[in-house]
Length: 317
Image (cartoon, one colour):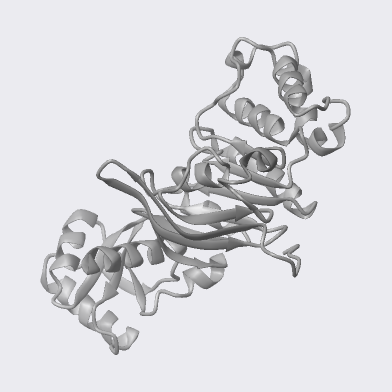
């Protein structure tokens, strides 16, 4: 991580934002270090976009405060807007302008030119150059995202904010976009990116799990995945639906849910060894219609931790 010892690039303190009766952010606090690639991970409606819009001066919080590059997002909004780049979730460039026209326009807004900033955007612009005369509306989903990223970078921002940049694009474009973000990180650019895809968390230095306006966890991806706090078992059987119903009927079940080709199970007992739980669970499943079920240790992922933390949060509410 290319982090300095100075004040973090982004600081949010007890942010609250409400829309009528809906609380979009409920006392959110976090810090993002300079040079860090930081991920906001969570489902739609969790509060990710609201948080990003506050950090980019587009929304005013109802309570709490936030600073980006040491500047208050409310008091110093005009100065801050010159130093951040923002790529919203919805494609927001001018569809009737060409690729080159969009880039020239956004560069001119910030008092620069594409030629002057070529070094910053070269890795992305080189992929767009063959389509310079094509209207933005005629680009593929992946190329639209690359154009939007170029426009967000053309004024050399010190912090880049991206709202679900890989949503709605194909797997190859997702991988290419994350490779580009990795290159920007290697150059020292502080980046905050939101995504609903748990697997993308592994590309970040640190992540925050976001649900219903609150942060469920903030740490490095491996640390989050390792924080489940109890054994995780993987169950396989031919009839997954019947096996899932049997798992949820087990007397000590805490959670049971589909996960890829398997079913994942956690036990409500804090002190039960994994081997004991696996044996008891196997016996129970074989006696309740899943005679071919196998039970084995499973490696926790960020998605497993998210499901566990979400369940704990809902139980406490």
